[in-house]
Image 1 (tube, rainbow, N blue to C red):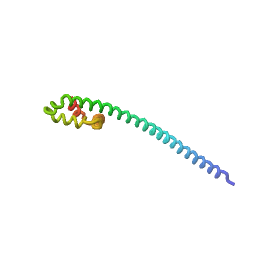
Image 2: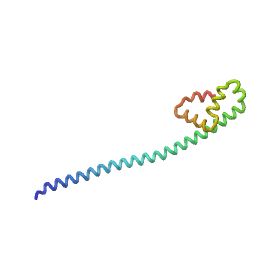
Image 3: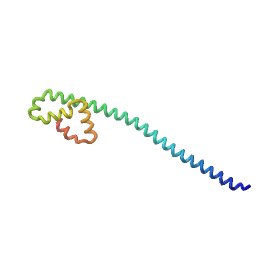
Image 4: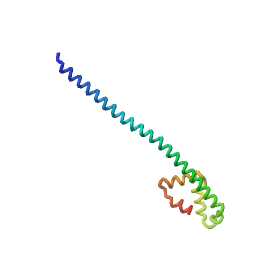
Length: 119
């Protein structure tokens, strides 16, 4: 019986096992990457919650400030600068609209129009 043929078959089986180990190592790295992504998504969710809270607080501040300004000087502003009066209502008329205006300015929208309304 020729045993050299059997030895070569055994070497091929070892090569197949090593290939499987190599693939499992790849999946271990993939599992590590997926765990990292899931962990970062949880942190990103809480970052968005915190950003929404900041927008809510400053939205309330801007609505309150614009409301008191319009209460004190609304008649003068309406007669002298009606466009500014309308833009103030469009940009900071409610908390939701003020939050959207703050979001737009934070994400790269042109903030000079909002600045001109508040200045």
